[in-house]
Length: 383
Length: 166
Image 1 (cartoon, rainbow over the protein chains, first blue to last red):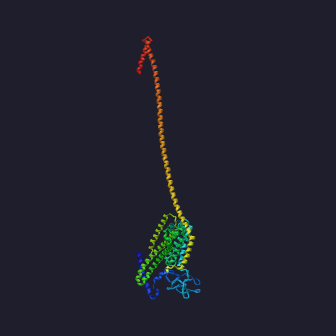
Image 2 (cartoon, rainbow over the protein chains, first blue to last red; image 1 turned 90 degrees about the vertical axis):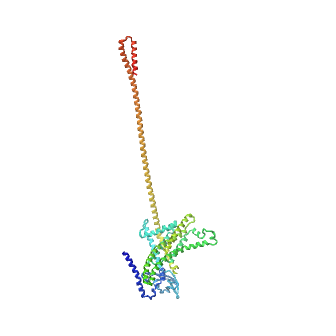
Image 3 (cartoon, helix red, strand yellow; image 1 turned 180 degrees about the vertical axis):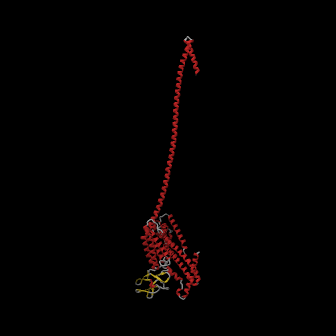
């Protein structure tokens, strides 16, 4: 009963909140800056930035180093110097963040004779900083686990480490060993690194404030690099049979000579696999972030219409965003799992032997098909 | 669509940091973790195997003990049966031996008795004949003077007696 009363009180307060907000709004109704531009906010949150937002403050940002190779060499300076669009003169060159109508919108540009020129930019942006944090987190966690194993060779860890290890065993035994078989020890380090790295980045991205909040795995650059690594591992350690299947597959001769139709298709297939990996992870994670941001923005959009609608939207939006965030925790795991599993399958396909008995091949294909089906059925659920 | 164009700086840092992460974990974490995890799995497998074989052995031991016990029981029963047989055999033998012995004794006794009877008869005959002779001599001494007539008479009397006896 008292719980119900509490819930009602909270609901009433949330209904009232936009009233005060709109009262504030009216005092500066003429101020253009308070107008909400949902598109800009969404893209600002999903994208990268030269500083890291501080909670409850829209103007101050944690400064991060800007590193650029301009026309006259390396420049390193704090992002606080160019934070609000002002120009900064470092040595003989002037830098600023490009404005909204520039083709380099939001990036640091060098001003040469009044023209904007994009330098080579390897700044420690928000995403790069979050990347470092997740690297440290992943490395720390795994080194901790390794330390535990060194100290207790035959004891399974409990509690936190036990959870980490059970996930590890889930991936190692359930995905890597069953798919790769005797090749498992060779590729397990790469695959496990990928899994924990993605999982860590996904979860950090769900946190709203400092160590998290960066939409890392929802950034195509990150997923692209991961997919490129899988591509490299797949093709560099591929066996003869794999290359034979690409350049001289078992098809009627007119399909591969004189016109190399099958070869073109197979080579194209080599590149579609990492492309699919890139887009799948990127789109899923970005979609999750976007839904939560949109749901939050709905409050302000409807709040601008009328306080009552705003209040109602607040309740609905909050419930939905909490629900979506919980789903995103699940999606974080599933996407890391799917990425690892697909990488494992691509690698294992490049490891298959011709001379292995047909039934084994068939068996493996069946298993892969099952896994793909499972992944496919899991994928739409999260969109 | 800045979201769909990968940013050079991020790609660069991603490459570098992923390689660093992979190197650290490949060098310091994965070998230790995977080795102990595999070792532990092996240990558990071996333990299960060992327990299974121990159980099997125990079962085997139990059945073999039961077999030995059954064997002993069977032997015991056999021995008892054997002993019983021997016992009855001995008794039979003893019985038959006693019977033959008794028969022998009885036979010899019969023979002796017959012999003695014969002897006694003989003796009795002698005595009777002596008595008869004496009586007859005494009787006839008075009646008959002729000894030939006397003995003739005596013999006829004796024959009478004999035939009466038989």
